[in-house]
Amino acid sequence: MTQPAHIRQMPARLPATMQVLERGWLSSNNILFGGSSPAALIDSGYQTHAAQTLALVQAGLQGRPLERLINTHLHSDHCGGNAVLQQAYRCRTTIPASEAQKVADWDEDALSFAATGQQCQRFSFDDTLSHGDTLTLGDMEWQVLGAPGHDPHALILFCADERILISADALWQNGFGVVFPELAGESGFAEVRATLELIAALDARLVIPGHGAPFAGVRQALDSAFSRLDYLAADPLRNAQNAVKVLLKFLLLERQRIALAELPHLLAQMPIVLEANRRFLRQPLPALTQWAVAQLTKAGAAAVEGDLLVNRN
Image (cartoon, one colour):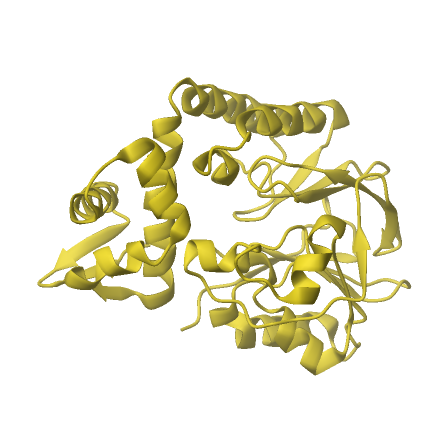
């Protein structure tokens, strides 16, 4: 399965040495850097789209080799193309430092893949990044900043000279990623707030999110994100409900159509759903599945056709 992909080259807003490959929701956006510094890519999309990711990168590089691959965090939709890119280019791969041992051991339980029922082909890494590091991409200097909340190990990148923020899933134009730590009874809302406050202090003029088009209305996006955070933190049940809907929609994006009878079994294969249900939702899985299906169909994100749940974009 492929998906639409858009190459964003906005000369008035993006430096000429940057391209944003806008993907969708199954695969994260990819940011490609050229210039006189080594060609580099931030994030690699989902495994299902790995061939498309490679083709987009090859087209964007126009014959140059990809020399470096960097992951903002290791959710499957941001690193699922790592293995294919490594095979094609033998590129130097850089991941968040706090995830290094898990990747070295390929511990899918400690990583997020098993918990969410998602795929990721095994990949290796060469070095790591931590909060406070700097790196040169596209002939520009970027600050590496810790951005816990959606993922405890997530990083964002900020170029102060250009006032461009690569925000991954810490800030979207209309919110942020699911606050996964809270589903397991760990702190996440406070970390999201601290990350949003950090972003607010950067005075970015342009944000390149992990999903969706780059945007310039940073203050408006932050106001929306703070409002969303207040809503979720006021009742953690809301975050758990949102997570179940998002994870089911992700499965649907990958498969496009799923037998209704299969859905409770699929949700039962996701430890993070089971934990969220145990802590917050407290419903039999068939009832929880029916609720999630109803929510997706009500929102126009899915449709029931006979005995199938069918994706709607």
